[in-house]
Length: 469
Ligand SMILES: Cc1cc2nc3c(=O)[nH]c(=O)nc-3n(C[C@H](O)[C@H](O)[C@H](O)COP(=O)(O)OP(=O)(O)OC[C@H]3O[C@@H](n4cnc5c(N)ncnc54)[C@H](O)[C@@H]3O)c2cc1C
Image (cartoon, rainbow, N blue to C red; front, side, top):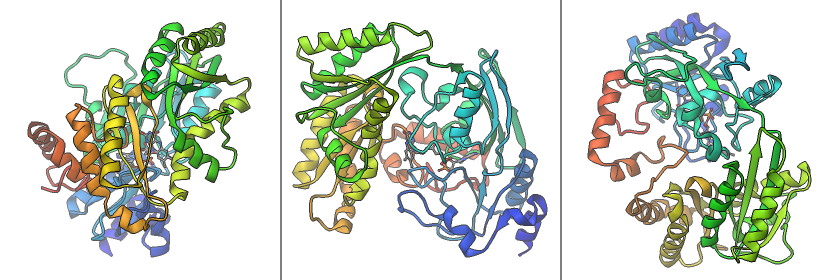
């Protein structure tokens, strides 16, 4: 009770929740894989309040779990079941401090919802290019802490590439001010990069300086039916070359993904008159209008002639473009409605994606006859969501009980191909054991030393990314 009273004195009594009903949304995550418990949820309204809360928790030995929009897919923002931690929510840190269309920067607090930042950039005539399915609810501090990827990585990079500076409350409550707006700064270690992708294990991001870009003024989007999976690679390379490197998205859609979408998600339609096994959503954009659509059309015409593509449709309107994106975005939603899914968020060198998909498909189908493989996503980044939908009429929990076995099969192949077991979603709780299994000992040792140096008490999101010491 004393701890709660002390914390309430820092943030105000209305900003600390202890009632079970108030806590629920902060204790469960998107997929329902984890349900944690907490002493309280604390909602500081300023960097100084975050620092006060962290300082108090550090002195009282209370573990802390930072949380943004709670849309993470690895349980990183969910507290453990022991109920000893507090959740520190950034949801009141929602101030945009500055938008500078000359520097092309935006300075914002960590709790800003991604879609609001996109809008603020647009209002200033600029683009903040980070874009993902959860953009209406994820928060920029969460995006930074997971180094989120999304659909524009090809052209603009991951979140890491979009951050110039950070402000962070360290695990002892000190505020580290690295809110720089510099494009160049070689003054020793690039400290902000330690916190990007750290999933809240090294401190709480309270504010950031982000890079903006000129707004695209021409966008050309096509849905392409491939002659086979392997044809995706030369087609993607040709699109880059033909458009002066203006490809902003290259997303793989398999037949099964489209069919599941048509079955379960309103508005999803097959853009082609006959069925195709593999399709690509290809999008080009440029801030200098003129010529992009023509380049796309010419490139696709040649690809049809050369047998790389067997059909293609270019969006003629914004509505048709969003129909194409709907097909892509509907896949995970449709999979959820089809029963259990076992998921893999893997990457390999882009040139090896088709080989990876074929090898993993053969291996999982051999291990589980009837399993429905749905590999889709960011082909241009070498990142495939290699998801498995349960066999028709299978028992969902019996299927999900084989999660680790399927992971091992897929991850062994991916790591054997010098790939990654987590391309964009992070480690959280979900992949702590997988990371311990696959990451080289020297890497794990360095990571543990960094964690120990910044958080010697081990109170900042313990048990996430790394095993508890
Ligand atoms: C429909 C859907 C689509 C998605 N698509 C993508 C996608 O395309 N690409 C992609 O990369 N991800 C995707 N995700 C995953 C998720 O949206 C991202 O990981 C997002 O960046 C998480 O942001 P959040 O604010 O919800 O973070 P949370 O879930 O709240 O937290 C994520 C992690 O960051 C930590 N954290 C949060 N805020 C802070 C902070 N201020 N300081 C320190 N640590 C913090 C938490 O402790 C936790 O470990 C998707 C999720 C959904 C539901």
